[in-house]
Image (tube, rainbow, N blue to C red):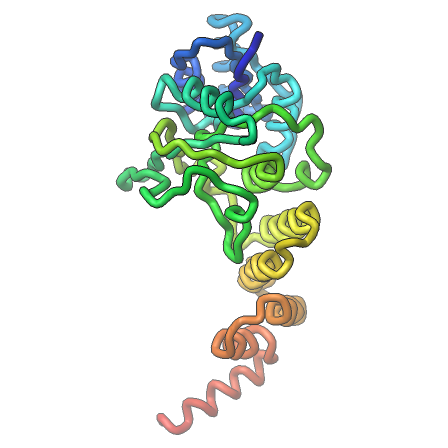
Length: 318
């Protein structure tokens, strides 16, 4: 019987996918595992590498090769791959990340076995950079032994769990429709899991989160309207999912994305659209007076009036 399903989610990561799969194959466990590699219609040779591993490890490595790109930044790839997972638990990894401790799966499965009221467990991870910047652990020494929904909701985006560090109970049979629409899988998945139980923490560094231009790490463009609107919709859906218990905090979080959208490339030459967004941001975010004044001057006042205002302010200095 399969105890843990390993889910490796990949797209065009031929430079990294071997290390990801090898790190899963190197796991030492007292139970049976399966390795499902979900490929989102790669065209760079990733798919062929997966098929090579299938032939070398029949029944253990299973390629989930989609006939087209499923979209949503790999979110649908994850859901379709998860449907095939037979394990009581599943461990998740992006195709450009990898595990460094051969006992990772054993430690995490033992933890969930010992804590039936926990839905998820994660470990510390090492962040490495493609440009050669120094590597460092994701989490410091001040971490708590477990986390709840309260810890995942804030006025800013909260992130301290690398995808490659997580293991979940395979107990959500059908994810809600709104989850499928989000371009971020980790945030809504963790919220849904935290509703079902605590999220435990193991401080051991057992995985690597690789930041590189070919991976999802650099795809979230904060100057892109489509990305920002997707984030706004995601947090609105989370607000509803949590029965608006965190409404005040989440409204301020959502307001942040309206503020970012003021500088989105799609709004650079559109005064009226940007002015409407600025008003919405001021209403939702309720920033202090200096920030409010700056928003009014830069985005709400017509350009001609703003220019005149700047000229008048400079007169005493001329």
